[in-house]
Length: 252
Ligand code: ADP
Image 1 (cartoon, rainbow, N blue to C red):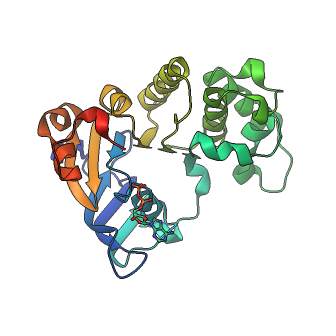
Image 2 (cartoon, helix red, strand yellow):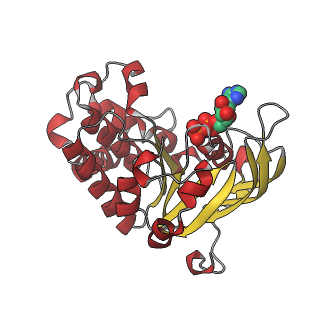
């Protein structure tokens, strides 16, 4: 999609002819996908269509069987500047979090920058600014286990901001989050994207996708659609990805 490319700039994510299978059967096949700095991209597709696998390939957590995966210009599996990437997992996995406070979670974002050293006043200022940006200052001393789903997800975004991440990767971040908080959450993502942070969203909720992401990648082993969101809505790519005529509300 030529209109998404800014020539000369290193892409944030660059997959070329990537295939991967956990067994001999490929789960993703022949994927070529480039995401540039500042984009807001959603990956959608039915359950088991390879979304999580694709994300792991992008981030270097899995290596392609064929093709190449690059992250910020380096081979993804060799990429070692984790602070540039903020990852927000599904709410469901948060139950395994340690009973530490919001501020302690956000402070972790500074660890790649300070190593084993103590946080300076400047680091703490960055932590406080991140808390403020996500509207969590009032909850700074509350344990993350005592937050609502939406608040917890904002705390994890604050951790990424404290780490000065320039790529946010979110895997169905609002599963189990109440509708009002979901809206606030996506408003926050849009505001961060306007500030230049690249957003990669893996999402079931097509309402959220079509309202917020500028570009949609529709996946079912291969790419069924990659382009602007309004064209995606008109394309019936989702129906083709499912192999049936499927209404937008029917995605799993
Ligand atoms: P999605 O995120 O779209 O639901 P996944 O990438 O999780 O899809 O899964 C794609 C396919 O790969 C599915 O058939 C799933 O069962 C399979 N799969 C996922 N993870 C593993 C794994 N660790 N080992 C074997 N098969 C896996």
